[in-house]
Image (cartoon, rainbow, N blue to C red):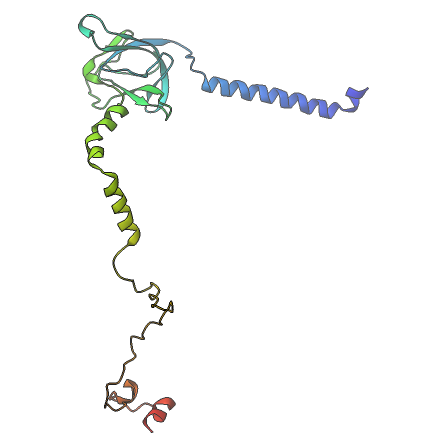
Length: 233
């Protein structure tokens, strides 16, 4: 009886649940690193593969096309090198002149392998299952620790006193007040108003002259302002 009375609400809850399950499955499929369909195995030799782990992405032009299946230390002629095995979708068209680079995926330090063709030779053949990318066509990830260590001599030359002095000089700015800076205060703490750039102090014994508007000759005789006539009287 109650279900029949709230049939609309029950149907809405059922539809919402079904939609939530479908969306969750879609998101899980997008985020999943599982690879579907046929795949080929590619091996790449790196000088250093630190931080690269099984399950990391293999990307072409930023798009995930496979994953790393394992890393190991090389033997024989590859002693001292890192050998990385990757599984790439068989539908990806890769050629034997492809290069492999280990790049950073995010700020957490996670890495991925980027495949590219910088040369794109016309006579390059398609990459087969079990192909090997030699050391000459691979590049390891940037070692941030080594990069910062390279700046150590520069940091050693910087003294705290020099940095503090540069900071104080930057805060002080150029010497002398600027045109928009407030006038300096006197000994009594009062601030004197700035002098007018047009005001002139008459010298002793000199007569007061009329303003420039009355003394300046003109080609025509325009009407003089009332205050000019009052000044010359």
